[in-house]
Image (cartoon, rainbow, N blue to C red; front, side):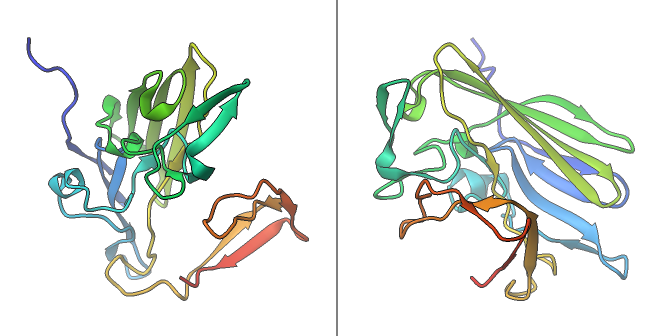
Length: 224
């Protein structure tokens, strides 16, 4: 019987202004080219030159979707409905971004690929009960859409089945708005509307505290 599982491929979204190159390996953004003030396109994300490079594990989560749970789970352990679960320790002493084989290493199925003025592509992957230590089946979909000449939108959804489970998806693109090969980003800043933040410990694991901020706009200046 022929192998019908999806193979790693590349796909493009192009609305005449922005260009996005993606691969179904990890549901990953490889490049995102946008016009500058002079109209010249610049690739503003970090990525590798080929899908083969991603397959070799050369990208530190460049541009992918991570899960089931993004970020770190302390000591690779959690309790859900009174049941204790242990996860792979792939970032000692913690479990990071879904373990050894997270969603970033899966080849996602392409559900739909639309062209036109608002091109989009929808990817889907499934994770089964017990995979990387997590309970329950879950089906995840992610849709990238160029909604305007300057906007890339991402919609993600995780639908569990069977046992209760945990899920916390994240898109893990690294940005350099001056162009991916233009140097460091020490002059970049990001503004987030937030009423609270979650402090982390020395291993960058959330402490459990939900800390209110004095103003609803949190400004974080990149310094690393």
